[in-house]
Image 1 (cartoon, rainbow, N blue to C red):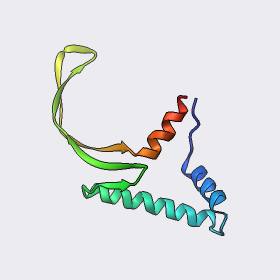
Image 2 (tube, rainbow, N blue to C red):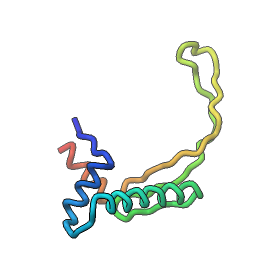
Image 3 (tube, rainbow, N blue to C red):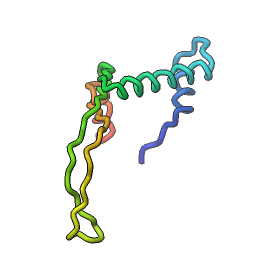
Image 4 (cartoon, rainbow, N blue to C red):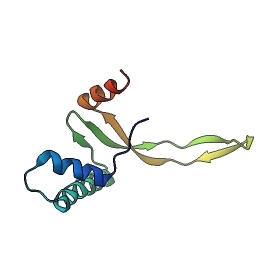
Length: 101
């Protein structure tokens, strides 16, 4: 089973990799600000492209009719909604493919 990496662990790894005097709080601020800027851009409907990693886009899902599992005879309307889609980039796709090998 794969491990989970938290934001704090990510900060620790970035600090260890950089090894150039950034404090953990400075790296945490950078990561947090990056997340906020991506969130703000998506909130405006913009596309966020991180080359070789992936692309975040906002899509509208059309309304549809679902079924209630407890009462399959009843139709349940599912309203239209906006969702975030992620298209995997080349490097990330290659890295993920190595997990299954």
